[in-house]
Image (cartoon, rainbow, N blue to C red; front, side):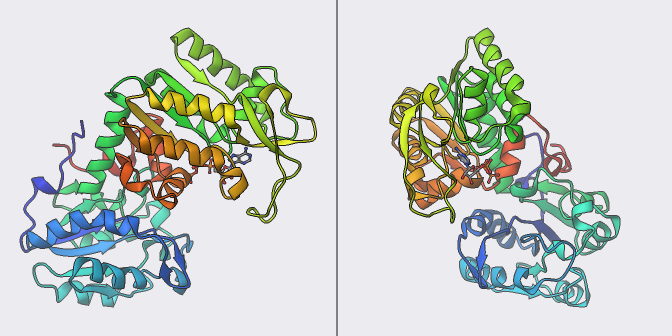
Amino acid sequence: MLNKKTVDDINVKGKRVLVRCDFNVPLKAGVITDENRLVAALPTIKKLIADGGKVILCSHLGKPKGEAKPELSLAPVAVRLSELLGTEVKFAADDCVVGPNAKAAVEAMNDGDVVLLQNTRYRAEETKNGEALSKELASLADVFVNDAFGTAHRAHSSNVGVTQFLDGPCVVGYLMEKEIQFLGNAVDDPKRPFVAILGGAKVADKLNVISNLLEKCDTLIIGGGMAYTFLKAKGYEVGKSLLDETKIDYCKEMIEKAEKLGKQLLLPIDAVCTDVFPDPIDAAIDTITVDADKIPADKMGMDIGPKTIALYTDAVKSAKTVVWNGPMGVFENPTLAVGTKAVAAALAETEAVTVIGGGDSAAAVNQLGYGSKMTHISTGGGASLEFLEGKDLPGVVAANDK
Ligand code: ATP
């Protein structure tokens, strides 16, 4: 399915290998609070070390917007990676990313050594796919490996531009290969019934995903804030719930499309409502639960209710493949996290292939301790969504074909 060369197709012995990783991890006061992305990057790095490559790692972290921001330095990543790999990862701290420190560190490398460059987004050209940074990065290496699935939906210097200026092979790493295989198989060659679950705040963010998944799945389940525009499209009043007036017609079209294709489109049949949006988001809050066609004018739907939970978890029970992206409610608030938790638990219990599309749903699954029960949890929220839309990912396209 993935017609791209991988790290298994190249010989890196004695070569300088630039590896674009996704080390965009959450940091609190310099401490990494979730290291899933570091762990996910290890197989490729270990393979390149074992094969005798000179392994030069690079990544972005957060949004420094073209400036050196010490709180977004990759220094803590170098420390933790050294521990995880059991070998020193030398940090080349140049604010311009490819500067005297990086060049000297690469010059001094022996086979199997590992160097980490500074945050690529310290340079403004990075997110513009600028030529200067692309060329500088290419000048450090003989071979390029892209293993950053989380940024694969963007064409930036460190994942796309660099491939244009490097003479040697440009391939994908094991994480990228795994992500594409799991997401690709789930969507394009699913064991059926195939149930897709979409949640999150806005319909507008997921227009193409809804349309594309409707064609591929057997049942499409809608939850979260986006469900209320669908309910409005069915003619229900939704009170003060999140509503996108401009997308009501689109939702009507999707309801018709589902009927035409003979697909099941499940919408909430009841809702947990509040008077206001909790502030702070995790504040204690009073709720009432009503049927979906009886949301009072002064209330807002904030989570799926118990009848909807039963409907959705039943659909999951009879599925052979489930793809899930986006929470069922305002899950940041414990009172409004019941629906999201119930869906996560249903996925953890089923024998079906379960693929979690990154972002909030991945965080929810991991926080609940269900991570190991899922077939695959994507490391890329935005990238997995674009993949589910059926789009080509520039970071993958840029690698050499097999
Ligand atoms: P990511 O881009 O991280 O993958 P996502 O696809 O998981 O995001 P988003 O579209 O960003 O999801 O939406 C998540 C947000 O939607 C959460 O912060 C949640 O509080 C909010 N949300 C869920 N249900 C509702 C609701 N009924 N009303 C308002 N907001 C909601």
